[in-house]
Length: 587
Image 1 (cartoon, helix red, strand yellow):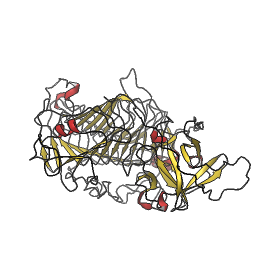
Image 2 (cartoon, one colour):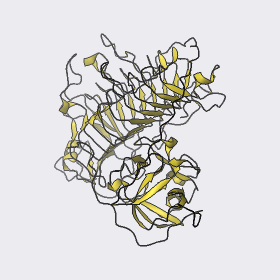
Image 3 (cartoon, one colour):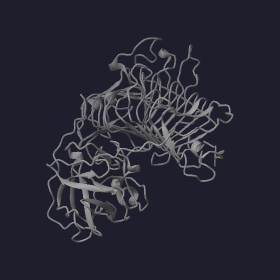
Image 4 (tube, helix red, strand yellow):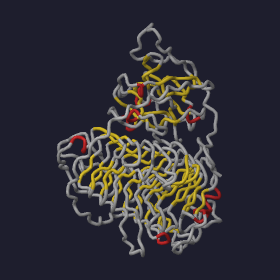
């Protein structure tokens, strides 16, 4: 059962002695860091004091920073490679490389199968007692995105300069890294909002077709197959598949993959993922490439529950997960009492999932849940008749705590309550490059309807509690929601709100009147009220810069249409400033 963080596994043994390349190091400089000898190290960011971390083991997993815990996910083995050194993760044995071998700034640094390519090779340039870690292929520096000091912040490459977020200490495993204290930012004075323009009436958005997810490639071994014409007495091979997903779950072992063939699966009880994988041997459940898998919960209990009723914990979710180290990819979950429900579940990856038309939230996590990645989720049309629409969100991470949870590339639309809801989750969550629209309208003619109708609800709790939690949201868009775009919901913490866009929402675009949040370079246009700040502060926002704002495009068809082949949201000029100003989201 998954309770709390359960990282295990020793660090990899040191490799044979090789020379470390110190690109551009100043020989004999006073206080310069000595060359790191070959071996296994923790790598600590100079700005945040947090450790370079592999939050999963699969190829394509983007690296993050996390509190140093001595786990295998933070043990990096240095070995000679293509004019520099490779960085091999202790969990899973994959190498740190730049996504797509790109030479551009801002590209992700991720786990890749070790090939010796120059995009997986790094040099160590002494910078005082620290290093700049430079990619051989791109000549860009290893960097924490936006210089963030938050646990779970993403790691990427960027142009090299003297920023401390691009400096790292390298400490042999078995010793305790000394974190660099996080600097205390100087608050920016509260800006005076510009007058509110006359709002444009909010039309009811038209739901877009369900995109067919693109599953991950088939692994070479350790697979169990499931098909609608299978037999649970079969061995689970590609030619003799199992019939039910639960039977495959009961049989699967850490490190194995359940491959589900195309079709609709409609069990009468929910699928329970209660066993654990491990950090270096996760359990994967995915569709077969090119085949659409639908898990239909309509035959399960509480679909829907009676008005005012509660759903027993074990019956929540067409897929119910309490295990750790799972990878779910390319599945479509519909008509459940919740689509996916997770509690006390850690270090999972939810990749390219569709959760739609469920009788509660599409994807819901709560309890002690850490290290989860929700990537390229589409969650829409979810509603809750038993609570008159007040509880069904596209994505809910509520009533719990746990570090390192990340939401990236989500689209959350036409849900009865909110797009994203972080109510009473007491640890920071990072949200980026996500879109929420059309939430909070009564599309189901539910009686006594009370859906809240916000795009991104960033915490809060009962009025007597309102715990402070320092969430972060970046490069995201909220439009055409019934009420708010981005809202602190009474969260009294310091939320970081950067480069987001609120357009044509029925209430306030950015409502941070009850927190001490910091808002930078956000764009608010055509909302009923553009902004409400209270004691929150900011700079470089559209209301700080003043004037009227013309948008390059208000055509949402690309951003709401089919996803790209890699699962990402297609790029378009939607809601970008026509004058090219560095304000608002770029998706």
